[in-house]
Length: 381
Ligand code: P1T
Image (cartoon, rainbow, N blue to C red; front, side, top):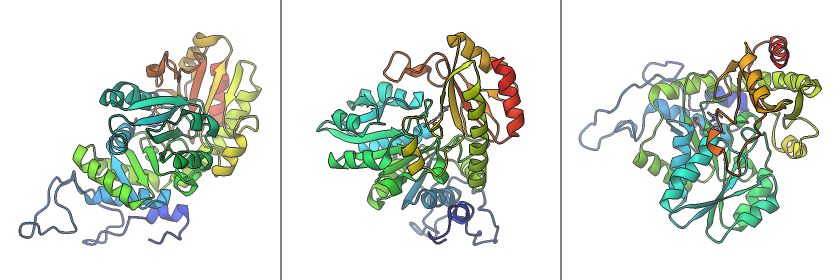
């Protein structure tokens, strides 16, 4: 599949050549752990053991690389498994990493509670300011980690500007592209070295699979990560890879609809007397709206807002919705709602990443926008 094709075409065809044996149009689920060798070392297509390589996973990995415009894609058992592999590839004891002041709680926990135990230092910066990132960099800084848009406050980082700052210091720029998806934003083209995904979210898109991915522009780094992927072992299984590919085929149409519905939800929330603040990069009053408009095709399906009446009022809104399902995660076709302070971001309590107690996060699905607005209206009361 040529890289010249447009995103929608690549999503459906990249890495998805009809099966050479049967012509099956969809890559089969190779539910297998090992492969017959034609004499010792006589591998068919390079496959020897499914941790090291599996044809269904290969199909997904080629697809991921094409969609992010990278040279190498790697699929993992979860987003955090991908992050763990990346951190332990890039960092050694004594190294330092700059992390954002807004990020998924589990990502923060990985830095604060796990990787730090191996002698890796981290400090927090407001990555929406390239100057703040520059100020946080130390001689030992090996990586700058960015989420844009960020979870849950929909903060925006100027990828191009922060890539320059990181590279001047000899550090790599990692961008978690989970909230945007490659349809809306392609960090490698803006100078990022590695893209991270929780494919559990928009890529899979149907709340039926947990997975993660790393995509790199540089083939050497891709090789190093592939080595660690195999050495550490948290690979995506064949069925999970297949489900993720199935989701990706409709990514473009889903993201268009997520965005259109989110814009309707934002309109409602901005005008609502019980809502004190709306976080959405598509709003002209978002502090980095212009940067978002420059680096994103559209603004996506995630919306956060604060509710008058504090934490209890925010929790009540989450409890009262009927169509927006109360639950963690995001990016599926069905709308979800949650209270980050008590749910997805409980692990950042007391840290520089603490989220407002009156915050509600909505993952706007692709149901009828009118039905979604009616549900939020009754929940806000
Ligand atoms: O859950 P997992 O597939 O391991 O991915 C972790 C992860 C990484 N990056 C971002 C931006 C994420 O949002 C997540 C997971 N987030 C949720 C489960 C959530 O509800 O926010």
